[in-house]
Image (tube, rainbow, N blue to C red; front, side, top):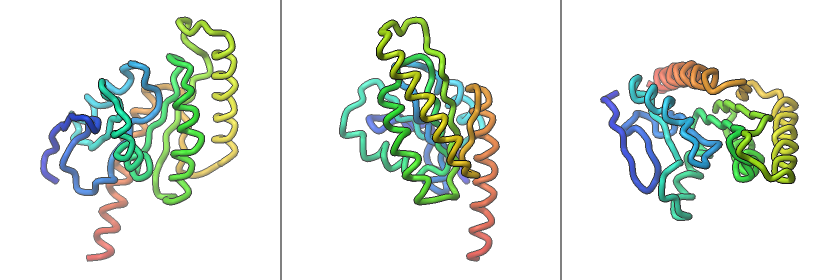
Length: 182
């Protein structure tokens, strides 16, 4: 594989080129100007791991198709729902996006972090209550799925570690599939 380079544009941020466009780590979940992705992207760039970052400064609806393609196809999807925001969008997206995509390809891996305590800057009591209720519902549903390709972690550090381990596993599996067809 040739060395990847960082590409930034209206479509998001990712490393390109890489051998299999879906052997990629999708960085979904909390946005709201939270910078949780920065250390992940720095580590991935250091290790030449392909990733897709849908969070850009000037997001617009024209970006939805590429974002949906990555959410539906990336072999590894990270989905933290942090206490930094009410997470209405992320909770809704988690409710249909990754779970639907998982049914289409059970060889994909999904890593979730759902914080149930909200940041003190969030002061609307009704929105806080709804957000916490939604987070607990999501955690309950994820636990009930009991799927071998769903990983629940309790910190961003654990999420980064899991993503790197899963990337190595998926890369090795891809090599085996290539060897089988040769």
